[in-house]
Image (tube, rainbow, N blue to C red; front, side, top):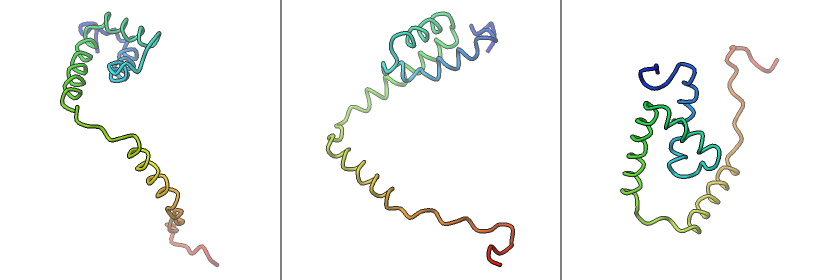
Length: 106
């Protein structure tokens, strides 16, 4: 990123942080001071604003296309419980084989 793209070399970290949080910002999961930092960066950095606009368009399209019925909360809870039970019931990992070619017993 260069001056031409709207990002000074010292601002690359700010660009990366803003774009890393773009999806959460679009879903309004980031509010307050954190959201303000992102808004300020986007208004000052044309390159990030262009990338953000693309992310916003994709997010909007996905939201529009994925409006089907959602699983009921009790079904989600039941599935999560089954997964947790399966994880708890898994046998512990066996000890890895001795890769040095020597026997562990003498």
